[in-house]
Length: 119
Image (cartoon, rainbow, N blue to C red; front, side, top):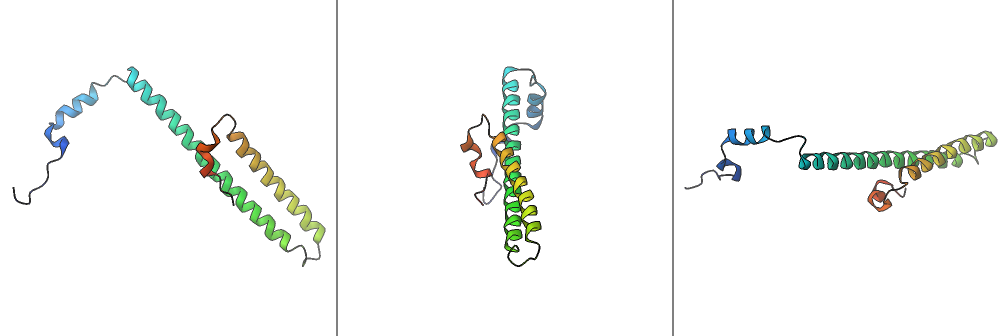
């Protein structure tokens, strides 16, 4: 035909037949169980990746806040107070870094290295 619509591969099958095939799938078959385990593994890995991204951002933010706080040290009259506050902030950063290390125990670090920013 001249300029007609292209026929897609799945247009060769009647719509009812595909629906029947979905209904006939056994959810306890070995193949479906494998796919469920793969789904769980991928979801777990994705969740860990997202937690690492969040921790990395938190580390960057707290580090920057600490740096800016320490920049005020020379101009502020209460230098001791600023040093104490910066020590508290650095402890928070150390805890976050420890959380990152705990997330990576037993994992291939290279699968998650892009989640952790060098900032």
